Amino acid sequence: MDVIVTAGTIITMDPARTRAEAVAVSDGRIVAVGTAADCQQALPGARVHDTGAAALLPGFVEPHSHPVLSGMATMPPAYWIAPWFAPTWDDVVAAFRKAIDETPADQPLAFFGFDGLLQQHADPTASELDAIFGNRMVMVFGNSGHTSYVTTAVLEHLGWVKNPPEDPAGGFFGRNADGSLNGVATEIPAAMAQAAPVLEAIAKGPHPLQGAVEYYVLLSSAGITSTSEHTYKTELKPAYEALASLPNSPLRISLYHMSTEADCGDRFTSAAPDDMLRKQGIKLWADGSPWVGNVAMSSPYLDTEVTRAAGIAPGIPGEKMMNYTRDQLDALLEAHVGEGWQMAFHANGDIAIDIVLDAFTTVLGRHNMIESDHRWRIEHIGGACADQFARMASIGAVPSMGPFQFYYWGDLLDGGMFEPAVGGSWQRFRDAFDAGLPVSFHNDGSVTPPTPLLNMQAAVTRRCSSGNLHAPEQAATLDEALRAHTVNAAFALGREHEIGSIEVGKLADFVELDADPYAVVPDKIGAIGVLGTWLGGSRIDLGEFAAASHQVDDAAFAQLRTYGVPACCHLPGADA
Image (cartoon, rainbow, N blue to C red; front, side, top):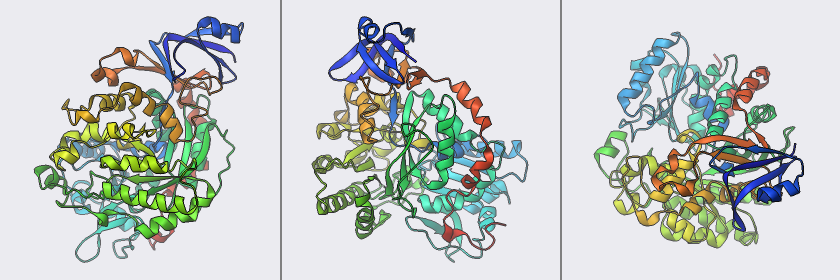
């Protein structure tokens, strides 16, 4: 269908033509950008659609997310208890009581979003949760995505009370003095294995994909048209294919296969169109989360009321917080370097970043790939040192930063968790851009709600959620911040030839805004309203998408119900 789209202004993110009056679209792709006359000449007789938006931009790109898992974890029948909904531990307990009151006594319950730092409470153990929930199966997932907490009933269901499993590769279980499990699990392999019985139980409802559908709607409502799945495993493939097939499906998805899966290096084929669903890379976790206390840093966690309330041990976390040894990282990279996948490493602390960069340099150098277009990625990098960005640039590494870390935790980082020189400069935007890197921004799935515009505001102002200013010298410009959620984010996903800017030949993916970001004061960027999105030249109808999801054959998603349970953890009694 041919259409000419207009708005108050069109911000193209194309340096050759930064602004336009209209964009002409044919068969889902852009054929002209410029004046209304230019577009009418390119597509004579095409209908004109005036969006009424103050500004039309390329659809925002969220380069690091987990849409299906985030939906399963946060949307009904699960409960989202993150600090933006439940600011204190008392609020969390109130949410627990509400769930108990409004559900049958035998119904397993799932909660997502516990944050010991912001909610000022130590990790809840099985005994603490048992005191609230009794013998009900309950799972609480940490807001960082790195921890889960369960009641004794869950451990009994798994058969782990009498037969506690060994720690899986890349994760570990909390244990009592006698070696029994205490209900706390850290890092994805352990956290998901422990949470699996509850996720399995709540997925047995009439519409197991509904949570994912609602999270797609949430992402689209934030102006996002392309994102990723950074914890992909093959069991999720039917879900992503089904979502891509629905009318008005609002998101293009790039998959990053977890390195812990035996088939992570396999090629990917799908019935879904390649521009809607493709495999892009392999995901690895170098260290943990700053909010849990297991980030590999050379600077010490302080001994303060903040860290004591969250149960974070003071002192230098150091290299012991790495999920893999350097030899293991080299072996993982060496095993997949010849397959052509983009490697994406979670690394928060400066020690973790140095080790990852060392591993990158060694393996890329061994294969004469440093000068190649490999785009190996480093994710989050909150605690990076200034000189590490130059190292990234020297080997072609691509950083994706998380302004949300600074925005929500900035006051705690600066003097509450780390020395001000470290915590105040968390997320060094200026250093990253000055190194000439194609920096992208992300929200990391359900760790925080998807808010590209708020990410931009945080990066430009260096003010966190309280309004307090931290390290203003690390601020980005608005143009840099916009690029971080458009052209740079598309580059991070290997899709800059398709998305990220409004240019001839690219897919016609747009976001409509109720204000021009350049026309508002910087601390109001996050308040700009998203009026809608376009994908492939069609305006997305989220209501139609959500309604169509009920037509999916739910029986096809039986594999989702055992997602995250490693074979090693199927013990006697686990299926009881």
